[in-house]
Image (cartoon, rainbow, N blue to C red; front, side):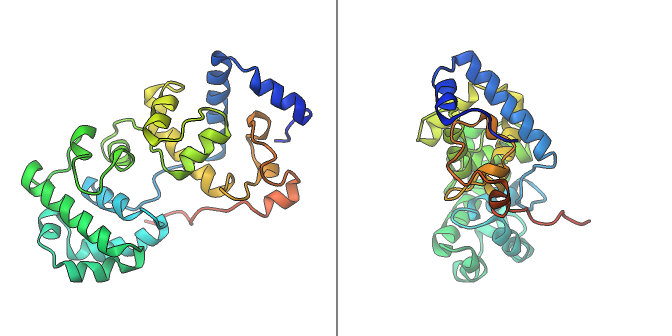
Length: 249
């Protein structure tokens, strides 16, 4: 999509936007993202809620690809909360070393596993208020687990999500909880989990932090930040990243 109108006209259009106009624009942008990323999903590999919980904690300050390369060995050795709670910390650190911050992550997954055994009978709780009491688990991680393991709608406010909603002019909030609250008011609750996936996919593939591919973005005409990156299509197209290959069964 090529952005229409002069920079001044675009700026005035977004500056004069009403609340109703914002809601309509935000939902239209999400529909475009849905068409652009029809296969959007959680890119962490998991087979059950416990694996997703641990994988999400491990994903801090690293990539989902790196986590997915690490967790098969981790879960082969420690398949349950009981197994993980009883793990030797030094042995676990060696497994988690490739994910970075491995000592802190080892402490978190050992702690959350012990908490699951001691307070939740070895089961991952299905309530946000319970999940955030676990070591290393904040609202972002809790919403990932709720939305993808239990089908409970939630907004995953990670760095991509926060960057995009501010660039899109959906909110100017900076704190994750305030961002979550602001975006929750723009979309039906049933859409929250998939909206999160689509925004994260778009942030990883096109709307990069340092140099977004504005000229190749399907949201160009609806985005007040158009021009943050190169607007020439050919130049922008070279910045577009593709995701990992589809999973094979």
